[in-house]
Length: 190
Image (cartoon, rainbow, N blue to C red):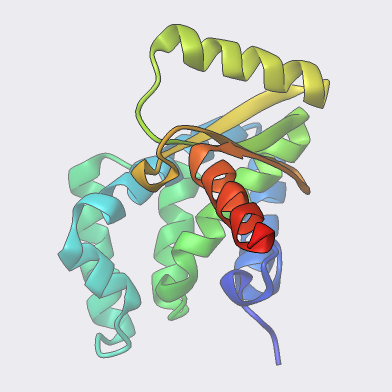
């Protein structure tokens, strides 16, 4: 039984990976990789903003016809066209809208790989200044020896410091982790 990307951990696994790979190959052949990425990003932003659209995408209660009609209206209103729109329509017609967010993530990963861009997840306790953000990005670029796509997340529970995940490597220099280490050392000293 095929797993979807969120179950397996790999963005290119299962249905999402197959659909994203097919779309990427078609977009590459038509020299529209960036245009498709832009359209998918716009649709993903709409998903983030609209609870109703998320419900439409996730719920099996809607028929394929209802999903296609609703998606047509969303695409027309948002101005998403071309291959990205056709791909979203195909996902609706094939009853695969539930996998669309994973397909979009998988497509982004394929674009990054094709451009030699490495993804880095950076978690900070508070929003950094632009200067600090540029320093972080420059440091990660030096370490990765490649362009870096930064996924910045604000996590107040860190208290301070930074947690960076770059590929399979992770560095946790958060104040929370340091305080937990001190607490464990103190308990062991009793």
